[in-house]
Image 1 (tube, rainbow, N blue to C red):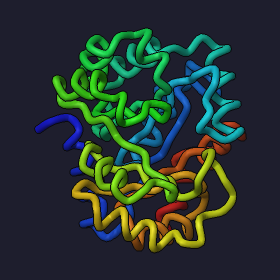
Image 2 (cartoon, helix red, strand yellow; image 1 turned 90 degrees about the vertical axis):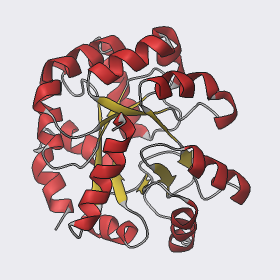
Image 3 (cartoon, rainbow, N blue to C red; image 1 turned 90 degrees about the horizontal axis):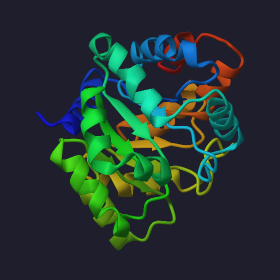
Image 4 (spheres, rainbow, N blue to C red; image 1 turned 135 degrees about the horizontal axis):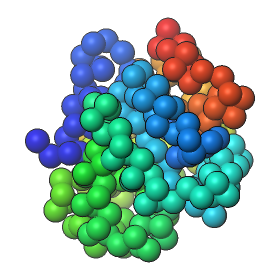
Length: 255
């Protein structure tokens, strides 16, 4: 089985058990680097797939909460190499598929081939790169493909239909459907959410997960009527910011 197939399988398994798959997002090393692996194990015990954010100095697709967490993690010395080293140390303890969400620069600096090899060894199954256009993704995609890792594509309500089909075909693991156009953590979902998500699901052979603006159990239920999974980012990072229990928060979302 290829690594990215573990992502799809975990999402489908959640659906077959009668619920929407949960994909929690955390910024690596936030709020404190020494608590990263503990937090990761905690959310991996509830989440079906875990998304780990690589801190970046200009996280343009993220809302204020995730931007702030990214800056603090960078100040605390968190880097892509540090993240992979930390994942190596707990790989045997985590069975949940993990995804790296990174802007392009840290990946370029690390080197695509080396990244793919190290990521696979550390238990990573897929990568999301919000500032890498599909047309410029061949080199990274080939390096990831060689190791069986998936490059997950983001789409939004503004994505034209022809491009939407292309991105759905290219995406591995799942398709990331942004539910509000713009930055993450927005307060409202698109009024045409159901039509949009239905369309994405009808085009995609791989599972579809919706993210950006999902904060409560009712949001998870709302998107779960149309797609396979819900991505929880800003709301979970706020829980960590307040030093509350992330596992309890995620369990509440399943109620």
